Structures are given as structure tokens and as C-alpha cells.
Image 1 (cartoon, rainbow, N blue to C red):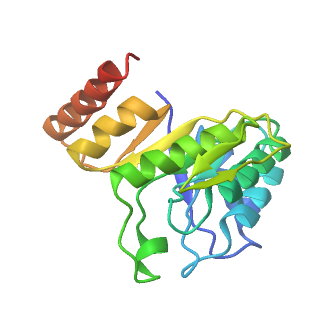
Image 2: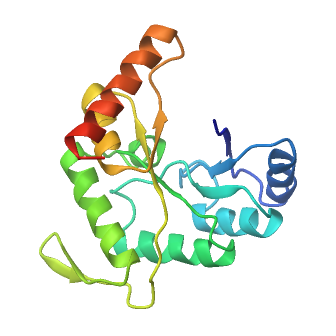
Length: 193
């Protein structure tokens, strides 16, 4: 089992020390919260964490399909992957404080899946048709694991089908966790995973 922690990028001067401490006590994943209205810029913060650590996986916990174009996200996470020596992951969800603070509604599951498909394609150097336009990140040949933040039954199943890992936000009782894992496994089976 792997464990992670979310670092709040409220102070870039303290962030390296926090990241080093989290890695030193054994966290496998170091996430950086994305909420442009409440904290420092995500990818600047991830750059700081990448340079302060050596082995932990690092990535957003979580970005969303509404505040960043998929080509921007792909280029940013590919750059973090390069900077960190291949340790990046892409945490993504429908949107929480980053979206709500802009007076937007969280993305629908179809939007999230469309966005993930676009990011995956352009990360690998392919052109992709997104919302009626061709997009690309011509320099990237990167594969990073996707981690989907999921709460509801449909999102858990979609995450099982589409993601490499799931950040579960359903509760900690045995019954709730069993149900959450069952829904993730249902999505995996439906996707042939």
C-alpha cells in the first residue's frame, strides 16, 4: 500500500522544507493542491517540490478540466515529469475550490473524460481533436499516471475505467470503503482492465 499527503502551497519559502519532511517520513505521493484563488500557482509549486525531493511521486491533487486547457496541462505536467526525473502523476477531478471560487460549476463526467483523453493524447505527442479544434504538444513523448479524485458511484466507476489510481473521497468506514472499491473494480471490469 502507498500513502500520500497533500501540500498546501500557501508559502513557497516553506514548501521545500515541507516536501522534504513528507518524503523523509515515508510518503510515496506528494500532491500539491490547485486552487488559484486560495494558494500559489500549481506548477510553480510542483517545480519547487520536484527540486526539493528525490523519490516521491509528485503531482496536482487535483487539477480540473475547466481552468486549464488540456494542451497547457499536458505541457505543464510533462515539464514537471522531466524536472523530477520521471516522478510526475496527474491528479484530476471535476473541480472544487479552483472552480467554485470562479463561480463555475464542477465539470460533468463526460467533460472530465473528454479532457483526460485529450491530455493523454497530446502528452504522447499526438494531435487530438478537442472541442472542435486540433490541439497538440509537439515536443512531448511523455506518459504519466492519471489519478482521478472520485466521490460518487458514477465517478468511482469512471475512475476505475480510465485512471491508473483513484483518490477516494467517500469516507473511512469499512462498509463505505468496500462499496467504493467495488465501484472502482466495476469500472475496471467494464474497461477490460
